[in-house]
Picture 1 (spheres, one colour):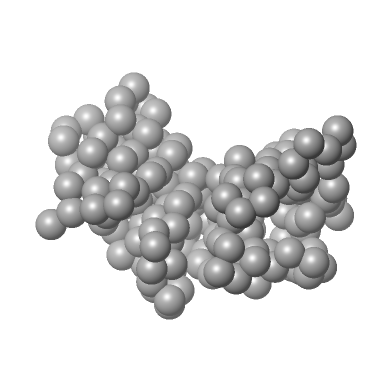
Picture 2: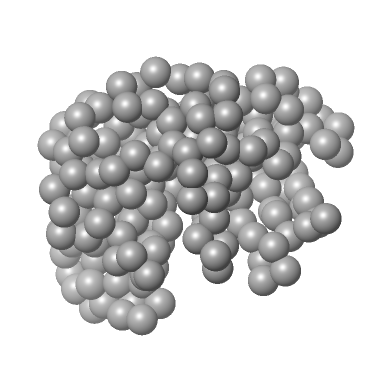
Length: 179
């Protein structure tokens, strides 16, 4: 779920229906604003969208497209997405540009993207390029030590850019201080 802080509009991932819904403040029903064209990998489709972030600077949604194994940007009013990172055809991967079931994401005040890459057991950091950097966890290795993750599902950053990770497989929230 994401919220536009200026209008109070809510955006909710309707994962099972492969779409994102928009609910205006005080509205009793919602509108499809992303996806809604069935499950798939075409640029007008989503594949089980999970985490979303409303980017007010670009009037768009940044979407963790879980089964598409990618992060996409869907500008409000557009009929398709543009790829930020990951696969264009639903293939999972573990390189710096690929993802394996991205679940959650957030953006910092500079527009950098932090992705909870669930089955790669890592947090990937993307600047304005598609090459990511692993900033927490070890790619492809689930673990329970202080530097490891096990199926991370959610991610957040605070105003000092400390990273918080919902480390689902370890039943904990991990804090990684900015170095």
